[in-house]
Length: 154
Image 1 (cartoon, helix red, strand yellow):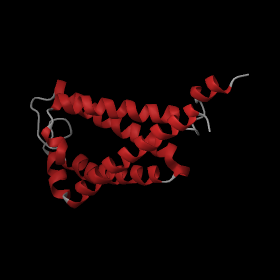
Image 2: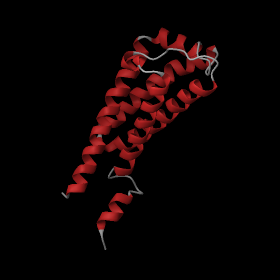
Image 3: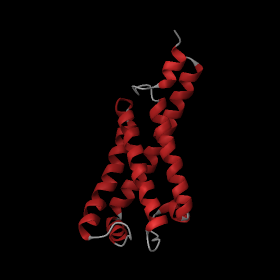
């Protein structure tokens, strides 16, 4: 196996492991402390209402756990990376909405993330989004993998 292929696989594996840990922890925490997550969504200045809170309090953690499961198996890893990118895009959009459009900034994150300011949270989300996109591009099964086309030669 060539050096660049090995490095590419390592980046995809490490990124997948990072997202597995992140989403499994976040999803399980949200399900185990469901009433807190529901209350946080319901009191959010961006997402308001019982219907949205009810839907999101189940959809978000179940989506996080589903993405974590997809990332575990190599056969479904690319789908999991796409899922991770979509979730990070949604979380980044929510963070932007809180930062720039909300009348107040709630404190609704748990764990280590709660130590971050909203600006730091946005930066972390952007880094994770870019990491997910990089892993998709470097994934061996990605159809438009320009990395493979460049290094295949004539």
